[in-house]
Length: 143
Image (cartoon, rainbow, N blue to C red; front, side, top):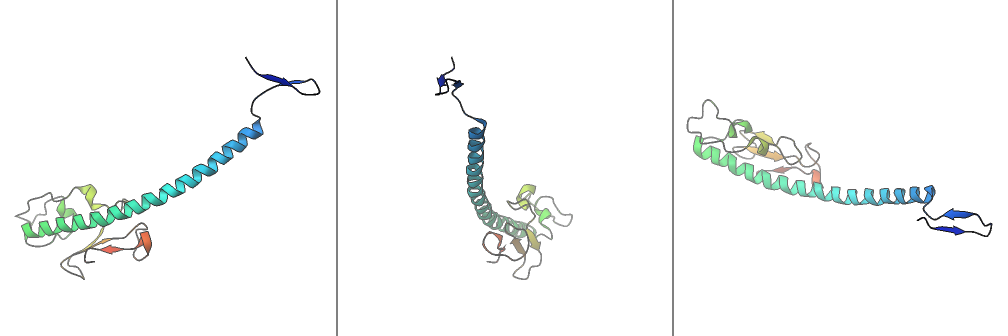
């Protein structure tokens, strides 16, 4: 049963929302959703950056474990996953292929021999390029 009311002109109208009212509500919901997504999105990047720091430390330990078994650090990070031809005492795999990518889906920077030690492992932050600050800052295994 629909509810009706009559105005002074004695025309009866159905009670409900007008198209303009519905559009106003949709626009307001869109604005609120945008604000919420921006807040959550910033938290996700911060979480990924923290995970990248932890993954850098974990991958560094896996490289050290490889070096203890083989007698030298790997030439390439892929040597942690697949046995190189010249690594007779290889006891791996030391890592999964997915662990060779940072939380943003990019490869870690790796250099052997490194400028700071036997190897340099670098997480390039959110932007994936050298340099930057905040969530875009680089982190090295030597730090």
